[in-house]
Length: 295
Image (cartoon, rainbow, N blue to C red; front, side):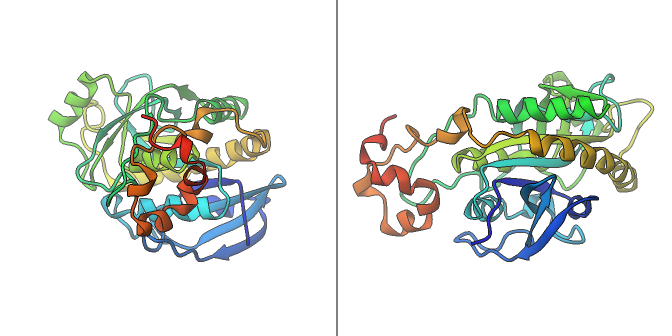
């Protein structure tokens, strides 16, 4: 079985970075359907990595239609323990400028109806999301960003909206009043599902615009975003080449055991079909019955 311990979710251009070797394309099926695209396995600075184009090759899947459950499950099935998400965001603060890099620390969920949990259909689980991004992986990401000379902001609050439309001016001003720092469409439900899968999750967000609140940027266009995203991807490639070798083999963060006391349903009441469907995620806890149902 082909494996990689680190996953990167982002644009298809990421796996074309200079120096990547041993490239293989893998199609993965999951109980939740097909992921966004085939997963590209490759080695960067000696580290085996699984790349998943979030929107599919050619950017054909809308943020609202992303098969996030399949994406996270597919990466988990390949042995991924850490995910670095690369995404475009708009800035809601003057000091966070286009082409800056943001390593967020918090999330606000303003999406509508996205499937955001694996625990449905006869099984209940409550993971902690007080710290929705892995603090260890986020700190390493911040450090690598600083070392390559990027203008980087750490610990920001990332507001996730449904999309695919951009904000109205009234919405943009409202989000600023909430204290949000950046706005985007993709960090959720990825972060929630990654935590349920006991995968560390951190984001390298490329600031592409000032949303529509800024008097000098009265509207946001797809052309503006894609142009700045292309420029930002070059910076992210440099960050990743430094970041990936710095990630330790062992995990000491709480992400690695997020389900230990999160499963509320008594084992004997969990449907057999659910046990089979989520065996990859919960199997070790079902075998240890004592860890299940302790909420």
